[in-house]
Image 1 (tube, rainbow, N blue to C red):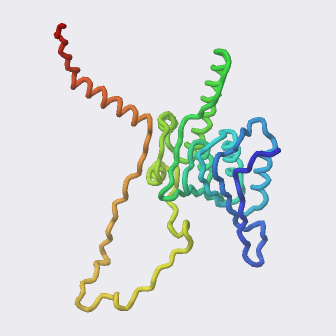
Image 2 (tube, rainbow, N blue to C red):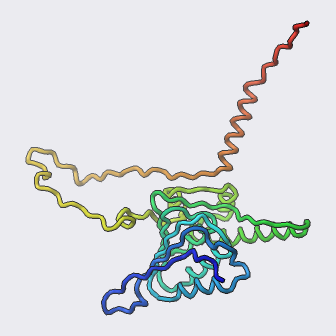
Image 3 (cartoon, rainbow, N blue to C red):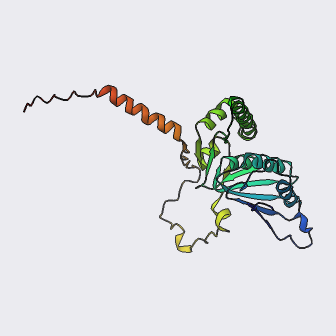
Length: 262
């Protein structure tokens, strides 16, 4: 029995006279990436590959996922990177953990202005003696290295920088994701909500003869707001530092002893 599919394909209509297999398609990845592990599973990855290869046109991948199975994410990443058509990834909500790895597979990665990307260290559940624990630690270390490979190929950041961002469980808004090159740009409003209509200018809006016209030779440059990067580990460390500083600067006042006798 197959697991619940966490992906859905939508085939766009091909223009008249063109091969339907060349029509662009849209892939929606929503929710947890695999409700159960792909590890030692030959059926589900093959099903995803079959769906992916059921056409040759360009594809758009919409991602909104908290993450999930790192093995599933790795295989989907490889399949999308190996796909012959152009792959455009659009993050419309959250691309966290394993889902952030899949997002890196896009030839172009775009993020909604209200979306977020989160990266952190892989985790697992292990039990057994010290030898088994050491194997789990080694496995997690190797998985982290493989994830860094995907991030580095997209961002060009150093491995040390990426490792630190993962250690700190880093959340990036759209601006910071673009700044750090996890994304190539933001999704325009008309791409999210349909074709944007621009009203025709009214005649009465035209400047009158006595009105001053704007200086077309000068170009106003709007300052772009900086992005937001959040790490709960950094926040906890900052709070601890403030508490320690406060304790050093405000020594405890000794309480007066009760000398009342009955």
